Image 1: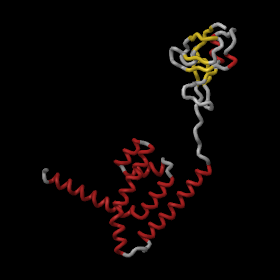
Image 2: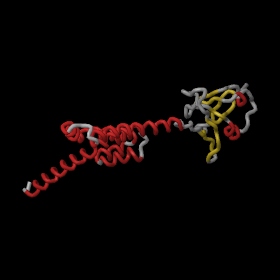
Image 3: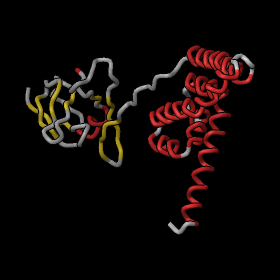
Image 4: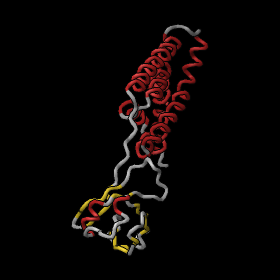
Length: 219
């Protein structure tokens, strides 16, 4: 058998190969091309443009047998490979429903405990005062966890949430799908949110007063 010319489906270059060859490597783009058995072993090759249209190729470098092949089509008067996109993994409805139900259970249990500790009289006055004093620091830890969670989803949103804590909470509850973290954050904030905001407001007022005093004193 003699040689024949074939068209590389990746770059369109003409490659001279043996008629009986089952695969070849394009010298121009280094594309590994595997031929179907019907495309090799015959000296009567169809016209090269027709051959390029019906030729089906598979990338053999690092490819697995079950990976989708590339088919060749016409685009702009030139043969080009058309990749088949892999299917995206879908989350089953059962898993989705379980996550929702479990997160709601966590929220109600944790939120009920925190509400009982803070507002239900479960603690004596001394322990309640300790809880109120620690609320600001607990809320700060929660904020760090929320920001790290948002950063995992979006770097820009995480940076904004670091500078603006309300935005981090908005992103977590309105745009993120971290159901369990939502439940934990919401449950904890039921017990510490009010006191944490009161402490933050007092610190902020104190900072503003110091700045005003510094400006009035002329620096």
